[in-house]
Length: 89
Image (cartoon, rainbow, N blue to C red; front, side, top):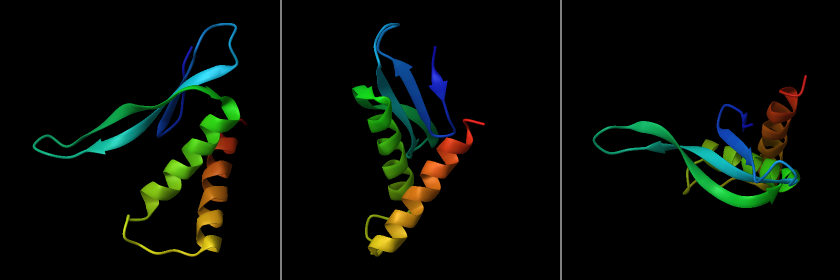
């Protein structure tokens, strides 16, 4: 079983384990630009994996050089969390 969203993929470590391996979708540049899943973490709890997904979504939205305030960060984090939560319906 694999749990997959628009930019993440969670794979259970084993059938009886509460932990997941997390892959995130990255843009690969160069000669042949493409999108590719890359391992972001091994053996994460579901809560930790969702947290990393939300942080990744925020960082992907803004450039590394861009300066934002805490309110913008928290608002974008909550937006990413709501997007992931909306898939539960």
